[in-house]
Structures are given as structure tokens and as C-alpha cells.
Image 1: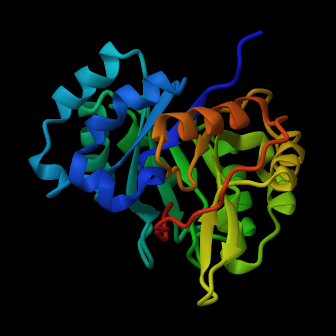
Image 2: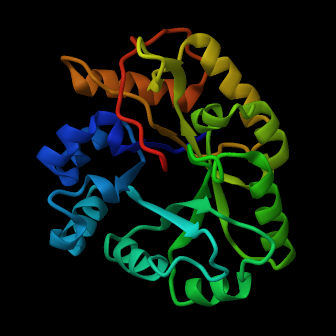
Length: 271
């Protein structure tokens, strides 16, 4: 039986390191660790995405046999606007240039006045599949707007999926279990990170404990079988390949009893 797809959001290696070394430099490590999908992070391109050789990056990913997902720090719906974010089109262009099959963005300020027909028109020319994610903002990190959004697009048979970020529900005291029951059927990509508070009281992402893994397995019972899942917690250590390989195996199986060492990582509002 084939194991589920495991991805790595490249921010897991630390924002500063990824910006310094470049996202392409992590491709060999991902392949060696058994990763099937790379999640590129637009905000981690240095100096910025405009100066990147995106077709070259697409080729580097393709020759290694990795699937590609492009993550962009934009909201699908801006506050006060009924039309989709005008940044969506150039972001779709960049995702396409990278050879991405999926584009992940935050939901943003969705309400019943948002023009879904305009969104369908915006997406129509592209082969890239759109995924919307719960983020850490008050408007984009609560369950109800996602229930409304997916009810609306389902009625219109619009092929948009959800990125379900397990940890982000904590920012506004939403229960991931409630979210999974309400939204699990729409989930096409699962962002995995455990959350704790650091000494300053700030919520931070950490690797999962065995109890976290068990909780995640319960959440996944509400989602499609074998849903692709991504590491979005810190991957750090003297032997980065071994650390990465161990964590990939944990997510692929979600049955290991080993407990990784917890370390902090940078978290951004859209992750």
C-alpha cells in the first residue's frame, strides 16, 4: 500500500537559513528524506521573488520527481472588496512559472457579497489548483467563514480545496476538532504543527509529541483517506537529513511512538 504524500513547507528549516541558501538548495535533502512534495514559500525568496529564475527552479524540482506547491502570503479576499485580490493573478503566474500544481493562499475577508463568479473567471485560464488556508488572523482564522465559503463554492461546483492548518486554530481559540468536523470533507492538504507558548507567552510552532500525533490521527478521520500532509514545524539538528527523515516517517505513518525534540521556529500570520 502506498504511503500518503508528505510535504515540507520550507520555512520549517528556518526563515533565515532558507533565505540565505535559497529554496532550490533544499531539494536534494527533501528527496533523500523521502519527501514527495515541496512547498515553496514566496516570502522566503531572497532578495525577492522578482529576481528569481522560476523556470529554472521548476526544472530543478521536476528532475528530482517532486510535486510542487506554491505558498503566497496573500489573502483571497481583501477587506471591503467584493472582487478577488488583484494580486491573485500575478501570483498564479508565478506559481505556474514554478511548475506548481497547487497555489495556497489565505481566505481573507470572505462574506456573502464576495463575487465568486469573478473568482471563477480569474482561475479559469490556469491549470494551478487553488487551496485556501486558515491563518492566524481574526478574520481568517475562525471556522464559520470557511463553512460559508465552502458551502458557497460547493453549490457552484468550483474546484477549490482547503489547506487545514492544525496549529493556526489556536490563535483565536478555535478547536481543531470542531474545525475538522465542520470542514474535513473539503481538506486537500494538511499543515501539521504542534503549538505551545514560549517563555514570553507567545504561541510558537514545535514538533509533535506522541499525544499530538494521536490527536492528529483523530482529526484525519474527518478528512479524505490519505490526505497529503506537510511538516510546518522546526526541523533542526546536527544531522538535518536524519531529523527530516524521522519526521517525514512520523507523518507518513502517524503511528510512531518516538518523541522528537521541540524547538522554536518563525511563524507568520498566513502560514
